[in-house]
Length: 169
Image 1 (cartoon, rainbow, N blue to C red):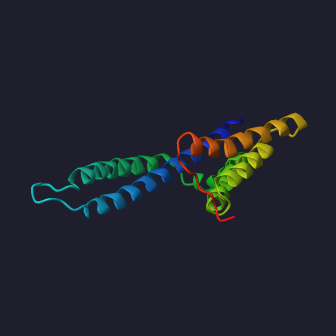
Image 2 (tube, rainbow, N blue to C red):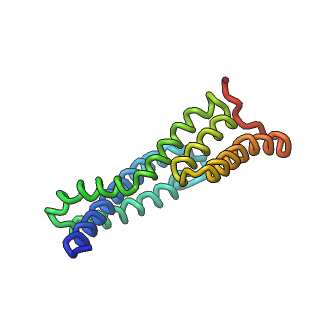
Image 3 (cartoon, one colour):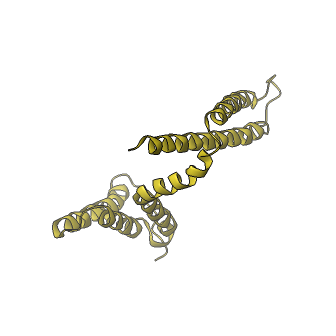
């Protein structure tokens, strides 16, 4: 890795850190405001929301300090490189996005297909996507998918008497 490429990556990391500080600040402000709506009893001087507001206020203060420090570290031309670095990172992390998309589809399909069928499809499809496709590995993937879908459903129903979603199908 060249020195300029390393510097660009470090600058992109600083920008990503800066954006995460902004997200933390925004979440803390929202939680600070919502903590004020916690009902309090007449026996409490400060109210039930006092401690959460203190914590979220401290987080806001730390986030503002981190944002100021982050702005100081980021050069003006590093924002231009941030988009390219983000795209390169997303390209390198494509399997993570595939797993997240498959999980989202699984969550949506769970109430429709039921736990056993949805879990079987989810586990089998992810294994086929992520592992080498040889006959032995596909057979192992099918056994693992059956175990972690229908096997878990049986275990929860028979041993723990907990019934997992059955679905409408």
